[in-house]
Length: 314
Image (cartoon, rainbow, N blue to C red; front, side, top):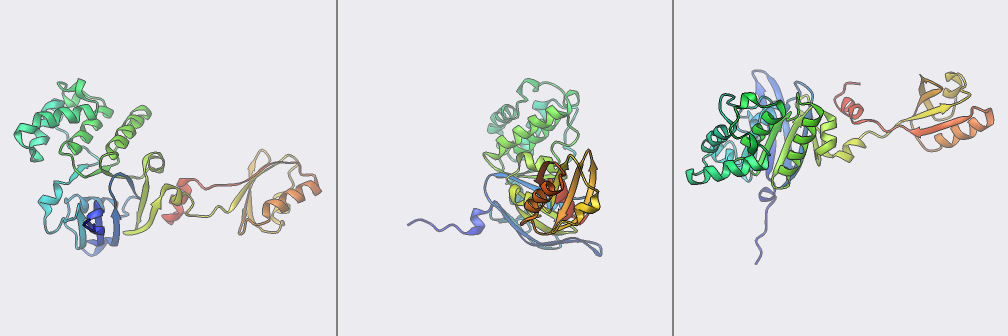
């Protein structure tokens, strides 16, 4: 008979009504969510939103005021040491020993992660190969580029093969080529385990994440796929180009148009409440009044615009 698997067993991470207070101020309140196996989960939040507090509690760095966190079914509050065995963490400033070589540092990390002595060498070799840093094994970490130092930081987070890897701003400060390389590495890691990627960069989320959670003012304000996030706010404006453009006031008199602005070069942004019939009326009026319509399209809001609205920073 097949054993029934509970939701707790299926979820790699389960956060239940999590709250934390610093003195009299609540950093996070009533946050609950589940993270399933494998894939890349984006965690978004502006400065002071509570994102770092949540990550520190999940990784066992900070003990919460209220609520529970389960990693692979284990309560971090009741079994903190055992729960940490399932977690790999790369903080925003990697905990590198820059006066050690890459191989020395990863060997040191392997022992810290309770890897049996007979398995340390193979674990180091496998991790260096995975992160493509084997050819720098004898080089001092201080002499590596920023991109390769970040690879070493990721290597220490996965050397013990955790089920959950938490990365805090992993591409911050890297050049465009290094960012592409680190993104590729993160995608490879996510094929075998769950990755939670904390970032303030929406382009980062768009490029590699499967799912997004956003925290603002200590509360979870959004949880869904990247596409759901992108479509969270319904488009409400048209971009219009008219060769013989009338005054803006004349465009604002069209039925359904509630606001507008001139953008230069005969282009306008026209806001509407209901898209039904707006484009058709604009086209018909343009023909009647000889505005010579060149282009019209519904403006799809960027991730940055959606982020700003969800953050209440219009």
